[in-house]
Amino acid sequence: MGLKSTSREIVGVIGAGSFGTAISNILAENNAHVILYVRDSEKAKKISKERVSSKQKLHDNIEITNILEEVPQKCEIIFPMIPSANVRDMVIKLAPHLRPYHVLIHGTKGFDLFVPNKQKITASNPLTREHVKTISEIIKEETSVLRVGCLAGPNLARELDQRKPAASVVASHFDEVVSIGQRLLKSDRFMIYGSRDLIGIELCGVLKNIIAVGAGTIEGMDLGENAKSLFISRGLVEMVYIGKALGGNAQAFLGLAGVGDLVATCTSNLSRNFTVGYRLAKGETLDEIIESMDEVAEGVKTINIVTQLAESYKVRCPITETLHKIIHNRMTIQEAHGYLMSFPFRAEIDFIDTND
Figure 1: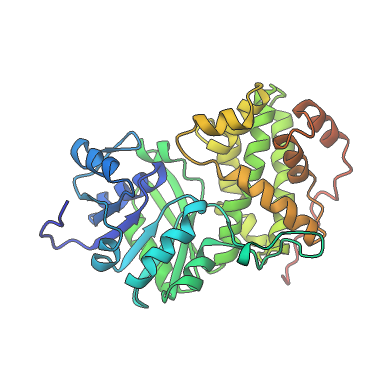
Figure 2: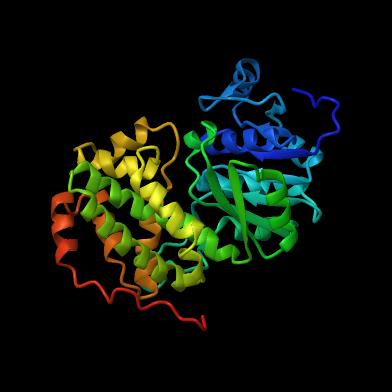
């Protein structure tokens, strides 16, 4: 697994799930030498030998490592691509080996929930933005890294692996990070846009997973495309109000990382979150679904977190609240759709402020 002699730029990827593998292949196709970190040693050996990760054939420019510190030691640019539940532990382990010159561009579409000293969340001590962090915020809290970015957009990993056309957004407060992401990832089949709204773009990627779960239930109940389109449009409005309460702005949600990613994940059975909703509507329990999935569906965790945040910030989120009741067996899916069809939703669009 040692690094071969090469003049290519060396880039690290942490996480060999479907998206991490797809991004590794794109980087490698663009002539980068990729060091792909796989946490499990046996899995790392198997991938290295068979040259297949998450059912995707690996490009020859990809090397596998099971040694986490090898990534920052050999790579100035690193793409963390792991589930949100594992991010803080990974970042803490990585921190002693990171320096201010490193660049981290993550692709995790989830929140980190951190309640210090195991405090209980109660009415007098509600869940707030202090307890809920985006991935870029964790990296900046726990490491010396300054140049942080995220990658978000309609990027279904299987389609990327099939070399179908796609696009994504690299967001960062640093123009240099955006330029690095574009240089390393852009190709004739993968367009890369840039944004300075790091938090807004991160929130887009996180919140759309909630709506994808709901869209899956509509598909599972065979309610039709009209109903699904209605739900997606109402879901986008809800995402904007939650996002603004959490520090984002409306403009981010109207772009590729917002409505673009929302459409992809709410209409494709390649989406894990959509699949969770679909299978719930078909009568499976949440525990059965989660146990049988190879990779994490971030939407379930996000529904729980956002329901509490919405209560703390007095933001009415009927879709998120209803999905929360479904996954905790307090409402059936049939009851939920009846409720939402009769819910007095706010005005069509009243959140766009040109001075925002």
